[in-house]
Structures are given as structure tokens and as C-alpha cells.
Length: 199
Image (tube, rainbow, N blue to C red; front, side, top):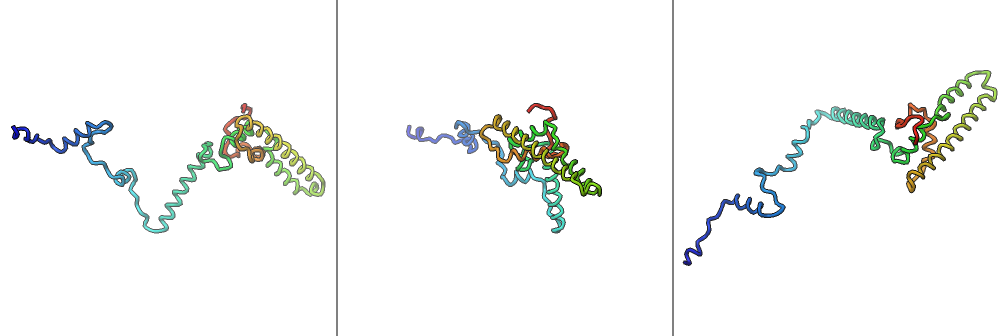
């Protein structure tokens, strides 16, 4: 009787015991049947094989080409108006609202560059150089720029305070005024609204 009680039970295979223990425990997945690859091996499979350049000149040329590709991608993204690619001065919803307001309206200030070209041309006309005509043109241009810039900045500031109360408005008036002096097709970031759109 003692012999039958002390008789050891047949042990299963070690793999069976491990699988049974894993399956018996809640929250444990059964074994995959293959070893987990090392992180270095997994990353090596994801990466393309790297070929070291033969000399420093080739390495510099490769770096320049890579930098050029990155810059071109960023410029393309900026032209599409993607937020991550914008310069720091153009980022944020406040600056975006200011751009939309300016781009939805025609102003005399956006023809500022053309007026400067006319003024420079007048300086080369001997009959006008000694008259007050050039001075009057300069005063008119300055008066238009100051007046429209002030009204545009004031309206943008009021709109920002209505839409985004509590947001910083530092420099937004000057930002809007300067954008209004740029020719529409040359503005960066490019306009995302059409003239006449309600903002």
C-alpha cells in the first residue's frame, strides 16, 4: 500500500508543461513556436543597406543632396500651407486668421511695389526731378500705407479677440499690415481663401 501511494506519477514533456502553464494563466499568450528576433535584427531588416562613401568629397556631396531633398519637400509643403512647414512667424491659428482676412480683400497697399517703380522712374526724368511731384507721390504712398495698415490691423485684432479670446495677439497687427503690402500672387504662405470670401 505504501508502494502504490509513493509511486511517482509519470512526468510529461518539458514543452508540454510550459505550454500548459502558459495556457492556464490568464493574460498569457501561448508560445509562438519560434524565438523572438533581436531588436538589432528587426531594425536591420527595416533599413536599407548603407553603403559608406569612398571619400569625404563623396560623403559631402551625398549630404548636400539629402539636404536639398529635405528643403525641397519642406518648401513644397509650405506652398501647400501645411502647418509644420511654416516659418515660426506664420504658425498658429491667430496668424492664419490674419492671413485669411487680408487675403479675402483687395487693398491699394498691395500695389505698393508698382508705385515704388513709378516713383523711381520719375527720378530719372529731368523735368520732374527738381519739382515737388516726386515728394507728393512719396507722401501719397506713405499716407495710403499707414491708413490701410492701421485699419487692417485694427479689424484683424478685433476679429482675433472674437474668435480666439485669450490667445496672444502680439505682433498680429503689424503682421497683417505687412502682408497687405505684398502682391497677392507673391505672398508666402500662399492665400488659402479667395477674394470676397467671408471670414
